[in-house]
Image (cartoon, protein in one colour):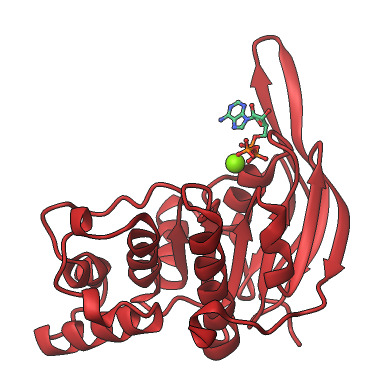
Length: 240
Ligand SMILES: Nc1ncnc2c1ncn2[C@@H]1O[C@H](COP(=O)(O)OP(=O)(O)OP(=O)(O)O)[C@@H](O)[C@H]1O
Ligand SMILES: [Mg+2]
């Protein structure tokens, strides 16, 4: 399989007061499509920073990132923005849904920024994305009428609606209880498998690791472990 994201000697430093802290330290890796890869590690080990570097939100001080065959360091700001708009979906811990909009309308929002689509096509794409997270019956509800787990699933559908090749999720489960955390991770896993998406997530929760195809461990900005999981194919959604 050809990797969809590769990094070589990735290094990022931050100036903290007078000290310079090396937050990501010569990380090299290759992330595969159609897999859920999770980055784990202690707080402050550089997980979010690594995700930002790999998605082009942050530039490295040294090293390079090749994403979908594109050397991100060769892109200027606007080109990087276009790359992200076209190819990347993002899910964060806070769901950032618009309270006045229904689930379906929240999911449709990103379609307003991009190649023009007719209203019917927009509705269809949004409905498909909601269906992929199992929320079709909830499509007319507003965020305050949804549970935390459902809100995160709407946020995932919104990240998916443009059918990005790369999906980045920083602590998508940390605001959820363990059942809903597993549901969300199972959904991310299924999206990777069924749609061929490269899904790269960060988690604190050790219990979720067995739901990933691969787990990368960061410590003090260094990649210290890279493990392929013994995949358990028990999807909570499928067995429900
Ligand atoms: N913009 C910044 N300016 C200065 N220091 C930063 C910046 N962003 C991150 N850092 C530092 O880099 C280190 C790693 O931060 P990062 O957010 O990547 O960790 P993390 O592994 O995601 O932690 P957590 O699990 O708590 O989210 C921390 O020590 C943090 O203080
Ligand atoms: Mg973080």
